[in-house]
Amino acid sequence: MDSGMFGKALGRVLGALVLVLLVAGVARAAYMLLAPLVPALVTLVVLGVIFWVVFRGIRR
Image (cartoon, rainbow, N blue to C red; front, side, top):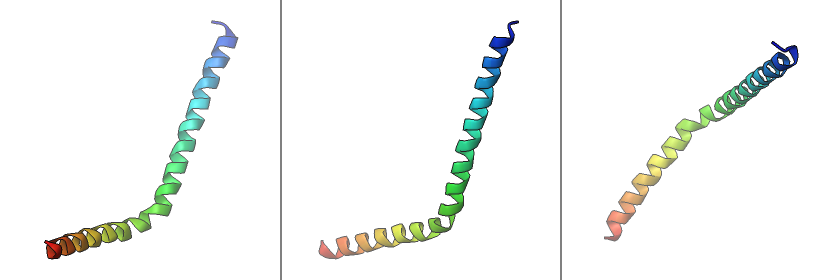
């Protein structure tokens, strides 16, 4: 086995591992920042749907 080939393969594996860890870290940070907003967004969507249904019903 050529040591140069092994070095390239190992470099690609380590590069892919670093990329996966970076993406996972960014996703976790985004989740930590956005998780507190989810109940408020769900509440706004539900209230919006109720508002739309009520006023659509009144107009008909």
